Image (tube, rainbow, N blue to C red; front, side):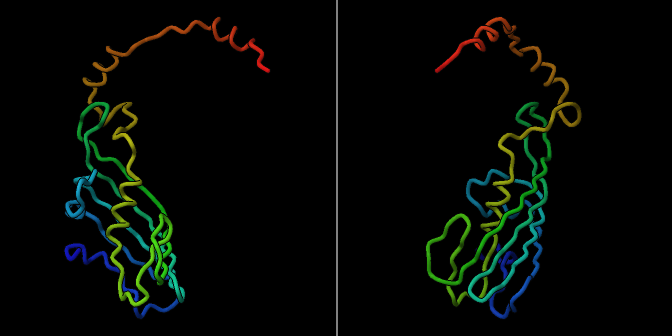
Length: 168
């Protein structure tokens, strides 16, 4: 984690109240995570840490885009990602959950890189596609796809008959 030292948030000496941190995430960031679904991208991670005596409420705002191949037309595209989330840091012993991260009460700093990585991945769409109604999709590939579309004619009378079935 030494390479990701720039994503460290100091904890000691923070007075109660809000503290804002902003991190720039580039392509080098993703190389530090094994099997990362993102290889190249640019993101801004804004963190607002509300320090309280035994805990901190951390709000994340992630914005940016990553490069990928469109799943529909196979052209290189850049997909936007925006994601907001909240995490609670508790300064006591305990087992981490999705919403609460337990830190050693004596911890002087917290490295947010793993959480930032996970939030970017959560914000990533399941499919790498645009609307594909024009630019930047490959028009030739989309034309080929429409040639192979399966067209089905639905008999509307079957649906009318099914609607008339009365169940207990």
